[in-house]
Length: 271
Image 1 (cartoon, helix red, strand yellow):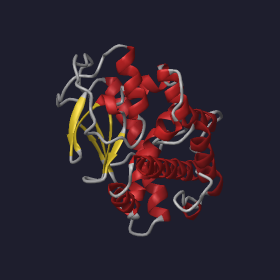
Image 2: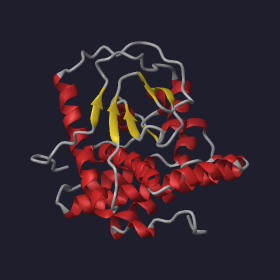
Image 3: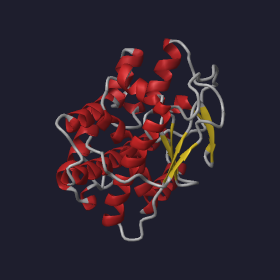
Image 4: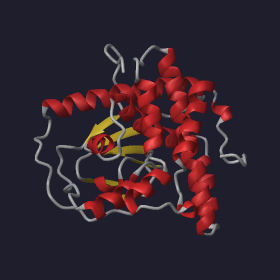
């Protein structure tokens, strides 16, 4: 991404130097559980016990560089959604290492990036980006930006009242219906990430290969692909985030349209 000279957001809270727990370093079973459970929108209360402290010193040059990148990406999402949604309130983004407290409960790095609607904050342990590259197969800075844009998409849903409505429906639904509602919620967040990418491209923040990275990331985190990778077979009734094809398709729809009104995943049979 071409972020040199871009402004940084003031809504980034860096907790990486405050302790808070270790990162899971389990075997393949733990990794598979994390990969299947973690990606986007997972309830942070569903955590895996942690162990082993991160050895990187706080406020290292790498930490500062990572924070600058995240701050610039977050600022670009702020510019887009303040333009598109009157009255939009920016979320905060919390950087942590290992584990942290949120209004949704204590969360470990195992759950991956998540959005907590209770405190209107996005949480991310940036060591997740190593997993994104090495284990999930989605390298590149635009893939990393897509993660942030997707979580901000959940904040957009919160701002529009969608999260509360869907969570209310989930309380009265059976397991299959809950999964379907979750899929629609996640696909809409992918669509909103595409909306952000539409305007990032318009502002010439993208370079050659960036969109391919985003599409690869969307494909890599489909329920079908993660389940196939983790357990060797696919259980469609258990999907909570959508297939690779669905995630790519909704991201592309947002990218191509730039119109939030075209992202109603809840009133269409063809998700």
